[in-house]
Image 1 (cartoon, helix red, strand yellow):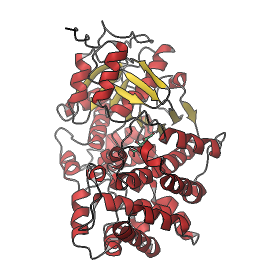
Image 2: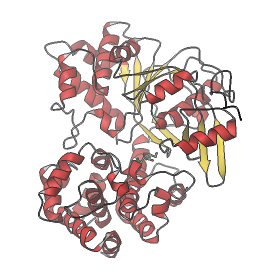
Image 3: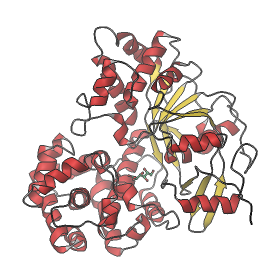
Image 4: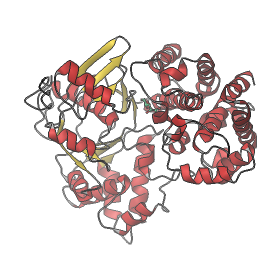
Length: 493
Ligand code: CS2
């Protein structure tokens, strides 16, 4: 009988290549795979470069799984970098503690107020900001926000940030930086606006001290993050056991490519993330636009078309020449015209890399994963570029196809089966959209209700009848003639 491999931990598995952190200068909200394969890896490089005070307290929003697994492994886990030519492994050991916010929200507030913490990083997904999809403003109708405003232990990320900053303002008052690492455009300014909106809603003068503290001692720089990080699979655990000889219950895989552009506007000290290749720049807005539109916007198109064509992964989807042509057309004709590229970035090289990254078949990045949360993700990806073209008198056919394919996956019209990968997509608006689809007469009717009445993609796109009817037509084409016909029709138009 072969012995089971030992559990990864301080005494087993590869030794981290950086010194152990001596303190936790960073509080991270959103202890998911993306954080563990991105900011944690840059922080490991920063620790190697000298700053041992930059350990991370990692906070998961709700799920215990990663927290329990990491705690059982002395807070270690494996990062497997996967490309078609092989895999390489590292074990960052940058976390000093991990817990679940939903179980101990008071601890989030207390840690944020601790003056040894000087940077808070966030990867809570587009959905985690409690913003109304229609207005982008703090959603005061959200029952969790309403509860957080009434007091008690805050359950939302914005509530936790606001309450933590309030506590810090009335305590040490030490400066701090809040750094959003989510795929929202102008994510720093947006986070600041949401926290300020929360504080402004507090009764009487309760929020006034914190608002003044925000003015003088809190910075919310923007950042653009980029690395494709799939969900963990049993196969990844087996690969780690086979290659490293340890059992790891919380490994992550990631593509080799990684990028982090950060606005250099910190209120206090920061880790030397440039040691891991991060770029500190005053062009972060350009990096964000380029990434959220070209990578994420096109990614959504590839995911929804792929799911409708019955394929499980992004690499299988982009391997189809029709999908590849649609991706190229949306990039060149519909996203690139609205993007201001950062200096030094060559658009054709960036584009070529995108296709290589999507084609990484060893990664197994699922169409259902990228298609998840479309109602909040697409809001970040499509309205501005679509409006730019519409205002110039042209129709963004492939952006319309993205929306039509999304609705066909999440809110299929009666009688249309979008297949298992579409059914596996999770979306906070799924129920509401499905109800609309069930009672719509055709695709145009559905598009009208979702875009013009529900304002799912914001108020400006709600006033674009040409766009709305094009989405409606394409929903009907997908339903009646199939997704390939809709692709042909959009590219030829
Ligand atoms: C993807 C992103 O799931 C999605 O919507 O587009 O997670 C994408 O893989 C990352 O942003 C890449 O940096």
